[in-house]
Length: 237
Length: 316
Image (cartoon, rainbow over all chains, first blue to last red; front, side, top):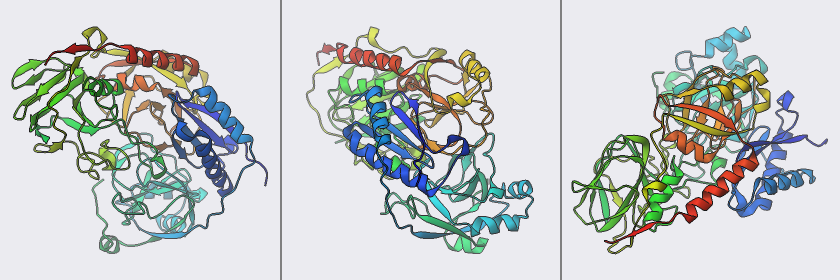
C-alpha cells in the first residue's frame, strides 16, 4: 500500500489540523480513515497530558494542545516526527447497523430538489439512498452526529447557502457525498430527505450511540404509520 | 446548604471551565464565554479555577441565600444589590441565610459571572458541569442541559469565614465598546480564498447581528465567499471563522459544533472570543492577522499580568 500524503495546517492558537490524502481530490477511502485512527492513537501517546482533545474526520485530524504545557513549535515538530513513522493499521471488524427512514417530501423538503438535480424520480432517489452501504467516517458537530459516506454521486448536493436555524431531531440529510441523521434539534445546512425514529444519542445509556466510527450503516424505507409506531415524532419545519 | 433562584433572568447557566476530551462522541466544550471574568469571580473567592459558577447573560438574576456564604460578581456592568444595598462588582461579599441577591440588567457588556464560595456543588456529566443547552448536557440536572429557572436550588457549602478580596477598578476589563479588533490566525482553508477576498475580509467592518448565541456569532458585512466548492467536514476549534456560501462570517464560540464543512479563514484568539461575546448586536468588529509567535507572546504576557495582578484585601 502506498503511503498517504499528509499536510499540517494551522487551525488556531492551540491547534493544528493534519490533512490526509490529496486535498484536491477530496479522497474518501476506508484506508485513509484507518490511517487517521492509527495516527490519532500515536498522537494520544506522544502528547499525553499536553493533549486537550482530538477530532478525527474523513480526511483530517484536529489536534488541540494545552499551551500551558507545550508551545506550537513543540507541537508541530512532534506531529511532523510522528507522521514520518510507518503507519500502523487497526483491523476492526465493522458491524452492520440497519436504520429505518420515513422518506417524505413534506418532512424532507429537499427530496424533490435532489431528484430534479439528478434527473431521477423521488422514488429512485429513495431507492439509491437506501440501497447504499455507508461507512461511519466521523462523529461530531453534535452529540451522536455520525457522518456517513459515501453517498451515490448522483445524489451529491451542496449545503444550503444559509443554514436553517432549526433542523428537527431524527432528520435524515445529505451534504455533498455525506449523509447523516440529526440526533437532536439543531441549526444545520444539510439537505433534508426524511426522518429516522431511532435515537442516535442517549447520554443516560451505554453505549451512548447505536453506531461508532468504522461501522457500516444501511437505511431502509418505512411509511408514516411505521415511523410513528417506532416512536418517531413529526415536527413542522 | 444552598441558594434558591428567585428570578433566573434572560439566560443564566451553570458553567465550569468546560468539558474536554469528549469530542470523540461529538460533545462540545461549553464553558464560560468570557474566561477571564469567570476566572476572576472564582479567584476573588479563593475558589479553584474550575469551580462551578453562574454565567448570567444580560443580567436579571435574583437569588435567595439559604445558608451563610460568600459571593462575587464579575463581567458585564450591572447593579448588584444584597438586601437592597448596592454592592461592588469584582469584590467578594458575605451573605447570610435569608439574604436576597439581585442583579440588574447589564449596561455595558452582556455576560456576567456570579460565583459562590466553594462553587455550586453539582454532579458533573462527562467530566464537567458546563451547561450546553443544545446538547441537553450539564447543569443542575446533569443530563438536562437546562438554563436556570425560578425555584431551582443550587447546592453549595456553608462558608462562615473567608478573607474578602477585591480587584482594583483600573484592572477591570473594559466592556461596552461599540467596536473591537479580533486577532485572527490565518489557517484551515485560508489559502483557498482568493487574495482579493482575503483583502476584503481584513479591510472590512462586520456588524454583530442578533442572530448570535453561545454557539456562534453571526456577522454581517462584506461577503467573503470561498471559491472552492465542496469540502469534507472537519474538526472545528474555538474561535474558528467559518464562511457559508452567502459569504457572511460566523465566529464559533464555546457551544460550537465539533465538526463542520464550511470553509474557514482561520480562528481568532480565544481571548478575543470573550471580547466578541461581550459585544451587543450592532457593534462593529474588524479582523487583524497575527501569527503563532505573536499569539504566543500575547497569551504569555496576559497570563503573567493575570498572575501578577494584586487583589485588595478587605475587612468583613
